[in-house]
Image (cartoon, rainbow, N blue to C red; front, side):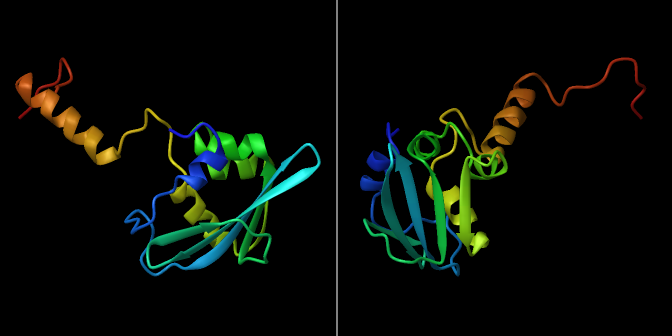
Length: 140
């Protein structure tokens, strides 16, 4: 996993990203503040592809935060929505595009997809001889 947002965004592989909605498109600018300076990243999202560049151009959504907040997002240590609710980041523009950012940055390193977790639990219960039953209940 990338150690900083800069590393993560620079290493974002080109190509199709199936986790992004097919019909959602827009531009996002990420403004990372540190020691009185701002580093801007410009993301263009279209057709499940993300193009990353360095620019302070206007965008459909502008997200501003301290560099440490973006680093936490890139490391999967915090969630975009949580940071917004804590007022760790601010947004201006089309807020619906914030959900794209949630899908572009990784989740927690120990996170698992709910379906994979369900399959794992189902397989575990089958090895034990079926679903767990609550004691003392008469099952008819």
